[in-house]
Length: 334
Image (cartoon, rainbow, N blue to C red; front, side, top):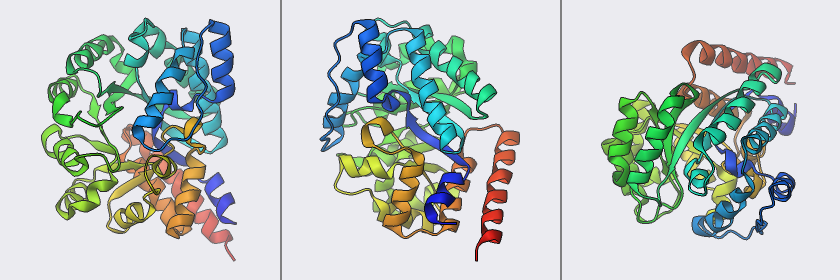
């Protein structure tokens, strides 16, 4: 089996994908027309996180009704099924919608309907992770957390995303402490090559005590922190293709370095409608840039399941499926 076929068929777990970042141009244009909304079409040409966000948020104005959010999530989940994704943990940004008058129940209601339909009809399991926008106030984040509490059964954890400059983890310490008290698991974006990246990673790990870190490859700058995440089994959700858009390379060397060091690094797609690659394409890009073997790719998927927020019975079943796939591929090799 060639590399492309091996990766295409491998059962995958995706832990870092923004639902709003899966809004492909055709759906964006149709929803904007149906809702009578003037939306500037993304033009690409991103050179850093800030230039990406400047195109990302205006496009969200096309999402207005509960059905729009259902369509967005359903389109991603159909693509996920085509790419052999068996489990996905999906970020969503309610503040980007409630701040322009879309009711929170419409946002989460549409997403939840798509998740339930995907489980029934596609065999794809998914959970939601509510992300706070770090360039808004901590008070706004706390009010969003309170608004989410009636929907706790639909949300597995909370995260933190958007523009990291001047918005360190400590700004949201009280919000994350309350989320922990409410039973949510915690993750946090520590984007690549941001001002203060390594200090933000240290704060997320030691002060906020997150369960996972999104991106986070700057951790290689501090061997003591690398040791810490390895010892605690904390996962890093890496996104090679998007890395190559917002910085000067995809950080393949750093991801492979962490993989070889026994850190539970994983590979996901981030905002695939903008960066041109879903999880399969990200795995292939990393494999080629980092000269990874099939066994390495299986380990990346094993890592993703092990640091996922799945119930143990479901995780064990999916791990068994992954191991069976790897064994069958090895048996078929010449």
